[in-house]
Length: 113
Length: 113
Image (cartoon, rainbow over all chains, first blue to last red; front, side, top):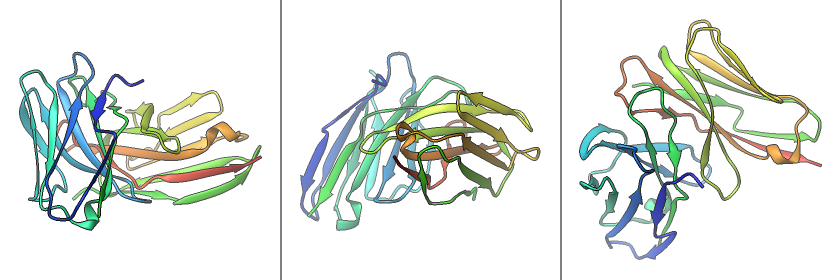
């Protein structure tokens, strides 16, 4: 158990819909990262938040947005969903500093029908 | 932008054989991390390399960081069925933001008993 929790575990929805994925980081970790993992693909970095502020942005689509709340939990919002958005979405957290490892949550599997 | 290439994409070995995965970056890295993802699981941190030419060992696993800090390798001696999974390298370049690790696409290892 990494200490990072993600809900829901599975999500099935239809094209055009909007969903929200939730992540709670490890206790004390200020940084939260979101990744997308499609079938046979690596981990695509989407976005990072640090203590409530956006810190870095990767290949995140404009239809996707995220935020980190004062209690440090984070939410990833995916809207106007397309079939190609079906993937595993991981949240990770880390302590402050570039030499810290990332602890991944169990992931949310999103299926868009 | 920074790219991290990892080869091979797949490797099938007989139990007891050795296995190596290679990671190459288009830019000089400040550090590189290795993660393992078991089937159906989430990535788990294995190790971090920071110094040029650094070699670290974890039992049957040997990790190397190239002299130019642009490449790395993971070697497993005498593979076991418990080694099955996908191995990812993740690098952060000197110009990158604090949290932006770039992951390779991973090497999926299968071990035949």
